[in-house]
Image (tube, rainbow, N blue to C red; front, top):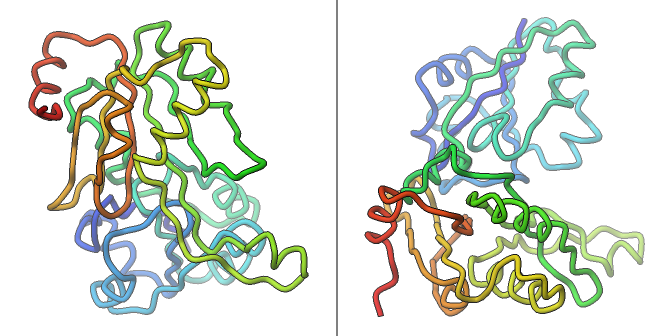
Length: 270
């Protein structure tokens, strides 16, 4: 039979494609990947639409217990659901490879992803450079590998999409030390936090990759009815409330006149 890897789109249960919905309804078992992104709806709504139970698959299941997902996929259809596109911001090639090793056919059904939905702000997609991830800083850990990539993009006049950290079912450091797992509440990085961290690293590095005056685009809940898009200098985004998750940030490179026209629609008015 078939392992279907199905993109769900960005907003709610209705964003699945017709082809994707037909595939899911043909499956005996359905798994929802729930640690790299979220839909703006409860997974119970997915079950209502599909008419079948949906198993929430956390990082541990997907990365270390993939056999639970692939079990019996050689004799029945199984669906693995991914928010956005299966091979958008986060790929699931390991699951695909494991299925191939077991002789299980794999079909991928694509959908909208943050990687193309950011086009709503008016910046042309082919003018983007390498995307970067920004993770939550701690007192002792402030990774800045994104800095060189942003600098390289900007040196070429390219825009940079910053994907912001998501913490779902993450064990606390204290519980790990005690050997008894206790999971922290979910956390989703805001544009405000990302802006603060970006400027903190620029202050530390001081190489001029960007500054507080660098034009940026903050976007929240792309694809939702209440999506929010604001164009403003990086420093001004620190005090702005974009509402609930998910958020992303674009650092603007050199712009075309048409891009400038659309960006003007979203600029923060003083």
